[in-house]
Length: 169
Image (cartoon, rainbow, N blue to C red; front, side, top):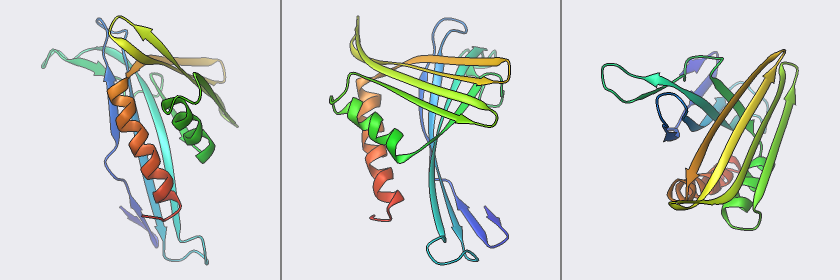
Protein backbone atom coordinates (compact mmCIF):
# COMPACT_ATOMS: atom_id res chain seq x y z
CA UNK A 1 0.00 0.00 0.00
CA UNK A 2 1.56 3.34 -1.08
CA UNK A 3 0.36 6.87 -0.21
CA UNK A 4 2.18 10.15 -1.02
CA UNK A 5 5.76 9.10 -0.34
CA UNK A 6 4.68 6.55 2.25
CA UNK A 7 4.73 2.81 1.91
CA UNK A 8 2.69 0.80 4.42
CA UNK A 9 3.59 -2.83 5.07
CA UNK A 10 1.25 -5.14 6.97
CA UNK A 11 2.84 -8.48 7.83
CA UNK A 12 0.44 -11.38 8.37
CA UNK A 13 -1.54 -10.90 11.57
CA UNK A 14 -1.82 -13.55 14.26
CA UNK A 15 -5.39 -14.49 15.19
CA UNK A 16 -6.74 -16.45 18.14
CA UNK A 17 -10.31 -17.76 17.78
CA UNK A 18 -12.28 -18.96 20.81
CA UNK A 19 -15.86 -19.66 19.75
CA UNK A 20 -18.26 -20.62 22.50
CA UNK A 21 -21.86 -21.67 22.08
CA UNK A 22 -23.88 -19.80 19.48
CA UNK A 23 -22.54 -16.31 20.20
CA UNK A 24 -20.61 -16.14 23.48
CA UNK A 25 -17.06 -16.48 22.18
CA UNK A 26 -14.40 -14.01 21.19
CA UNK A 27 -11.28 -13.65 19.10
CA UNK A 28 -8.12 -11.56 19.01
CA UNK A 29 -5.84 -10.39 16.23
CA UNK A 30 -2.35 -8.98 16.65
CA UNK A 31 -1.45 -6.72 13.74
CA UNK A 32 1.82 -5.02 12.86
CA UNK A 33 1.93 -1.93 10.66
CA UNK A 34 5.22 -0.64 9.25
CA UNK A 35 5.18 2.80 7.65
CA UNK A 36 8.14 3.78 5.50
CA UNK A 37 8.18 7.51 4.70
CA UNK A 38 10.65 8.61 2.03
CA UNK A 39 9.80 12.29 2.66
CA UNK A 40 10.20 12.34 6.45
CA UNK A 41 13.18 13.90 8.14
CA UNK A 42 16.11 11.96 9.59
CA UNK A 43 15.09 9.34 12.13
CA UNK A 44 11.43 9.52 11.10
CA UNK A 45 11.55 7.37 7.99
CA UNK A 46 10.30 4.15 9.63
CA UNK A 47 7.42 3.73 12.06
CA UNK A 48 6.56 0.30 13.50
CA UNK A 49 3.25 -0.12 15.36
CA UNK A 50 1.30 -3.02 16.87
CA UNK A 51 -2.45 -3.21 17.33
CA UNK A 52 -4.45 -5.71 19.38
CA UNK A 53 -7.95 -6.14 17.98
CA UNK A 54 -10.46 -8.04 20.12
CA UNK A 55 -13.86 -8.99 18.73
CA UNK A 56 -17.03 -10.74 19.86
CA UNK A 57 -18.56 -13.81 18.28
CA UNK A 58 -21.79 -12.70 16.57
CA UNK A 59 -23.39 -16.03 15.73
CA UNK A 60 -22.83 -18.72 13.14
CA UNK A 61 -22.01 -18.51 9.45
CA UNK A 62 -24.98 -20.29 7.86
CA UNK A 63 -22.99 -21.40 4.81
CA UNK A 64 -20.14 -23.07 6.74
CA UNK A 65 -21.67 -23.73 10.15
CA UNK A 66 -18.57 -22.12 11.74
CA UNK A 67 -18.65 -19.36 14.31
CA UNK A 68 -18.85 -15.83 12.90
CA UNK A 69 -17.06 -12.84 14.42
CA UNK A 70 -17.77 -9.11 14.12
CA UNK A 71 -14.43 -8.01 12.62
CA UNK A 72 -16.16 -5.32 10.53
CA UNK A 73 -18.63 -4.18 13.20
CA UNK A 74 -17.34 -1.27 15.32
CA UNK A 75 -19.84 -2.18 18.07
CA UNK A 76 -18.35 -5.69 18.41
CA UNK A 77 -14.69 -4.81 17.85
CA UNK A 78 -12.11 -3.07 20.07
CA UNK A 79 -8.66 -1.93 18.93
CA UNK A 80 -5.81 -1.12 21.31
CA UNK A 81 -2.57 0.36 19.99
CA UNK A 82 0.18 -1.40 21.91
CA UNK A 83 3.20 0.42 23.31
CA UNK A 84 6.47 -1.24 24.26
CA UNK A 85 5.44 -1.10 27.94
CA UNK A 86 2.24 -3.04 27.09
CA UNK A 87 4.28 -5.65 25.26
CA UNK A 88 6.65 -5.89 28.23
CA UNK A 89 3.65 -6.49 30.51
CA UNK A 90 2.37 -9.32 28.28
CA UNK A 91 5.82 -10.89 28.13
CA UNK A 92 6.10 -10.64 31.94
CA UNK A 93 2.81 -12.52 32.25
CA UNK A 94 3.73 -15.19 29.68
CA UNK A 95 7.19 -15.64 31.25
CA UNK A 96 5.62 -16.22 34.68
CA UNK A 97 6.98 -13.04 36.28
CA UNK A 98 3.44 -11.76 36.89
CA UNK A 99 0.15 -13.57 37.46
CA UNK A 100 -2.05 -10.73 36.22
CA UNK A 101 -1.76 -7.59 34.09
CA UNK A 102 -3.96 -4.55 33.44
CA UNK A 103 -3.36 -2.29 30.44
CA UNK A 104 -5.16 1.06 30.41
CA UNK A 105 -5.31 3.43 27.43
CA UNK A 106 -7.20 6.70 27.24
CA UNK A 107 -7.72 9.09 24.32
CA UNK A 108 -10.21 11.73 23.16
CA UNK A 109 -12.73 9.07 22.08
CA UNK A 110 -12.75 7.23 25.44
CA UNK A 111 -10.75 4.53 27.19
CA UNK A 112 -9.76 0.93 26.62
CA UNK A 113 -8.74 -1.56 29.31
CA UNK A 114 -7.22 -5.00 28.76
CA UNK A 115 -6.92 -7.45 31.64
CA UNK A 116 -5.31 -10.86 31.59
CA UNK A 117 -4.47 -13.38 34.27
CA UNK A 118 -3.19 -16.89 34.48
CA UNK A 119 -5.78 -19.40 35.68
CA UNK A 120 -6.63 -23.08 35.74
CA UNK A 121 -9.58 -24.68 34.00
CA UNK A 122 -10.49 -28.28 33.20
CA UNK A 123 -7.96 -28.40 30.34
CA UNK A 124 -5.12 -26.98 32.46
CA UNK A 125 -3.43 -23.59 32.53
CA UNK A 126 -4.98 -20.80 30.45
CA UNK A 127 -4.97 -17.03 30.41
CA UNK A 128 -8.32 -15.37 31.04
CA UNK A 129 -8.54 -12.26 28.89
CA UNK A 130 -10.99 -9.35 28.79
CA UNK A 131 -10.81 -6.10 26.85
CA UNK A 132 -13.37 -3.34 27.33
CA UNK A 133 -13.79 -0.02 25.59
CA UNK A 134 -15.93 2.92 26.61
CA UNK A 135 -16.65 5.44 23.86
CA UNK A 136 -19.13 8.04 25.05
CA UNK A 137 -22.00 6.05 26.57
CA UNK A 138 -21.18 2.90 24.57
CA UNK A 139 -19.40 0.06 26.37
CA UNK A 140 -18.02 -2.92 24.45
CA UNK A 141 -16.54 -5.98 26.19
CA UNK A 142 -14.75 -8.94 24.65
CA UNK A 143 -13.72 -12.02 26.65
CA UNK A 144 -11.97 -15.24 25.75
CA UNK A 145 -9.27 -17.58 27.00
CA UNK A 146 -5.81 -17.80 25.53
CA UNK A 147 -4.36 -21.31 25.64
CA UNK A 148 -0.78 -22.05 26.62
CA UNK A 149 0.03 -22.99 23.02
CA UNK A 150 -1.41 -19.68 21.73
CA UNK A 151 0.55 -17.85 24.45
CA UNK A 152 3.81 -19.53 23.36
CA UNK A 153 3.35 -18.37 19.76
CA UNK A 154 2.24 -14.92 20.86
CA UNK A 155 5.23 -14.63 23.21
CA UNK A 156 7.62 -15.34 20.31
CA UNK A 157 5.82 -12.85 18.03
CA UNK A 158 5.93 -10.16 20.73
CA UNK A 159 9.66 -10.71 21.25
CA UNK A 160 10.21 -10.51 17.49
CA UNK A 161 8.18 -7.27 17.39
CA UNK A 162 10.47 -5.64 19.96
CA UNK A 163 13.46 -6.45 17.71
CA UNK A 164 11.59 -5.23 14.62
CA UNK A 165 10.60 -2.01 16.41
CA UNK A 166 14.24 -1.27 17.19
CA UNK A 167 15.35 -2.38 13.69
CA UNK A 168 17.54 -5.13 15.16
CA UNK A 169 16.40 -7.85 12.76
